[in-house]
Length: 206
Image (cartoon, rainbow, N blue to C red):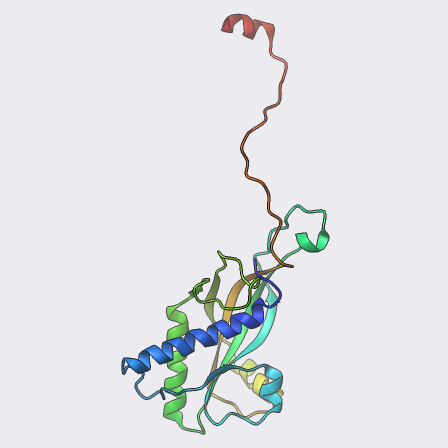
């Protein structure tokens, strides 16, 4: 399970993945119309709504955090906080900023969609963060998520921004708890109960 910083670090991990792929494809001459210096960053919705719009680049914003339909198991522990864990799913908004160049906007967003869906499972080779953020066997799945036109219009209206070329996707399932879980000793023996046996059965066995 992951620590409290995992959601922010997940966003940073997605950005780092896209940056690494941008650099690799640029070195191989496979980026096409996409600039080799394309800026890719994580931007919170609050900053997206209040700061000047970026001149260019791709931003990843945490759009929504919700409980997952797949609850995390509760570990047996006398410490309630230690035993409690939550399973979450995170929705992201990926937005292209290109100064109104339609070709650049469409190419950048298509590339980002292709890269993310080509790597739907993020493991510890991709997930970054300080010690204690992720456990060694941690994995997170990326799946497409489509907003209705009405929901998309209302989102940009709430941000008080003009509609931008964007797409949404979801990360699941993040299982969060305080620090590492309790460690239990390995089972090395099995204990059986003793029950009364019928005398006739014993006699036949002898």
